[in-house]
Amino acid sequence: MAGAPGGGSAPVRAAVVLPWERDGRTEAGRAAAARLAEAVGLAAGIGLVVVHQAVVPLRGRRPATLFGEGQVESLATIVAEEAVAVAVIDGPLSPVQQRNLERAWKCKVIDRTGLILDIFGERARTREGALQVELAHLEYQRSRLVRSWTHLERQRGGFGFLGGPGETQIEADRRLIGVRIARLRQALDEVRRTRALHRAARRRVPYPVVALVGYTNAGKSTLFNALTGAAVLAGDQLFATLDPTMRGLVLPSGRQAILSDTVGFISELPTELVAAFRATLEEVAEADVILHVSDAAHPEALVQRADVERVLDGMVGQGMLDADWRDRTLAVLNKVDLLDGSREAAAGRGATSATVAVSALTGEGLAALKAAIEARLAASMEETDYALKPEDGAGLAWLYRHGEVIARADAADAIHVRVRLSPAERARFEERDVSA
Image (tube, rainbow, N blue to C red; front, side, top):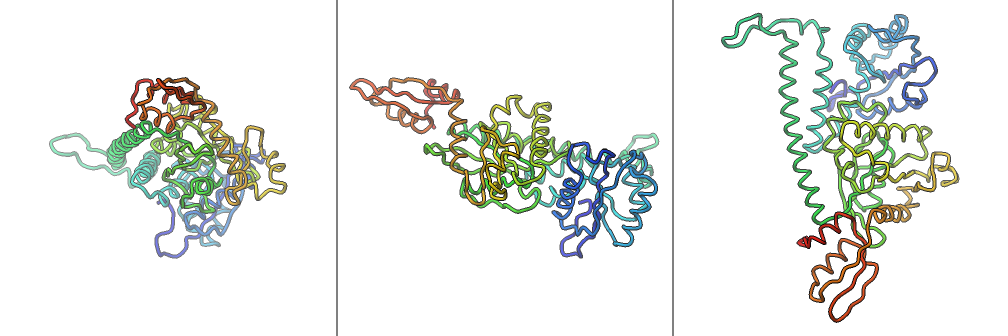
């Protein structure tokens, strides 16, 4: 934990500072005020008490301190007057910049990546989540190991019978971190194999998988609970859900599906986290339908949607997601109950005829969303005619259970059915693998 308060200790006073480009907007295109508010929310999410927040204009990025000399001194005064223990810089800091700011301000300094890693460390509950967070944190720490801390410049003696000058402390730390990272990756590989077995088992059932994705705090967990009747933690806070959760979803036709709630996305998501959470994000990669949930009431709804799409496109580049993910995606505008005129106002948030506007809180639009999910699943299905022997009750039951029987005619020598099946289900049935 880079600066989160310890259990039972006094609240940690924090300052949140957003480095602001000259044009009045951050590089990601987010309005400075909204971005600062988000950073304050992130800091509050781990119990930091924000006593000062500011947007600081940058004329240029100083290699040593990021900010100009006068800005560093001005902020040092505020840090001292407000008794700030942690200064959060909502942007990337180099190790040298972090060290120099800590010296100038005499407090702990963390950047956006460090803050998000702290939040993930606080919220992860499952073994998988804990492994993913530790891996991300170590990857981040390893990038901080540069020759900028004096204690890392000491040398250790050689080991065993090996001669030579030995290794420096930084080399030893880097080696130990490398060993731990290798072990964590091996453990996560085992997790992925286990999840692959679970997915294989679901394919034998099989039920289609619907995955929820979206910007953090878009209301995914509330929507998940509303659709499935589950009781997943759904708080008005960033990253309320970190560990993947799956529940059954009953569609209008009675067909069963599996709904998966996943971790929320955020602008400038640390690359360490994208890689470390690969096992979790594989649920998105395997999904038959992806529900991209947006907060319709948020003033930056369109920008947040673009942020999520940017991360998903990045997953394509890393080989974690197929390039056709957009074809499997259904846009969902949540929290329309907070808008005046609901659907009319939602149109200003990017709603189209292909978008479903809902309120997970009031239930508005949920029936339409389920119908849209079923229609999207049906679009990938194929209609096929079969003639079954009258005694083939198991085959007939399988078709009813895994497909949509749209016509049936019983004759003395055969049962003729027209059924809608996914390509995978059709292949399995025609191989007569109906053991599930």
